[in-house]
Amino acid sequence: MPGAAAGRTLVRMGDAPNGPTLIGSVQRAFRLLEAMSAHDNGAPAKQLARETELPLATAYHLLRTLVHDGYARKLDDGAFVLGDRLGTLRTSSGRAQTLLSRVRPALAALRDELSSAAYLTFYEDGEIRVAEIVDGPRAPRVDLWVGFEDAGHATALGKSVLRELDEEARREYLSRHHLADLTPRTITDPPELLRRLDTSPLAPAVTDMEEYALGTVCVAVPVYSGGTLGSLGVSLRADRRRRLEDVTALLMPTADRVTRSLSLTI
Image 1: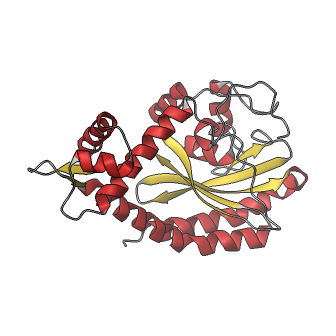
Image 2 (image 1 turned 90 degrees about the vertical axis):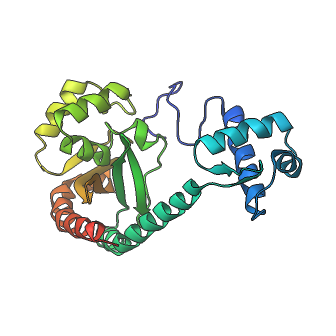
């Protein structure tokens, strides 16, 4: 990736320290849940261990964890069934997809008008997360070589969220995130980052001027889903940076429409 220095120790999307152990545990837990789902009246640990080909001790350990977190439930006769929390996850996922389906047409229109990929993020559980990307052959997305959770300081989408947070929330976020130098243009000094956010010439829009990836500039504006803060943005080739004011003028009304759509009761 242009601008990525060799030897950096940042964890990129898809990397996982101690991955085999963690991923293996998750896979085994999923196998137990799948086995449970085949038994309407539940099944004992020994049967689930046999069906999933897991050692009994491993099955017991994972089942205790699943019960503790609400993903499984232990009946009085010792059998295990799926827990109520799985139903909550299905409901939450369905609601999120319904909300996103409302705003995809607006993101697609933005992409088509600007020939640029459009992005939607939300600030959830203290992290900036990508919720939707609408791109196409003539509007390719940026290669997300570093996850947004590790690059909020270097992306217009992340900086838009940081600009809207209050001072305490900003300090808390910055205390948990290292401002890594992703390109020679990345701002890695917290006071300088905050100064630039507060003095953005396109406010409330903010820009990323090749700070995440050389050759790409981005602009983003805030959006809300009820009380949840987010950002809407687009990415452009660096040679199109002169269009940023025009792009911002189009982003603002689109962000208003997105906020209204996300805030409607389902």
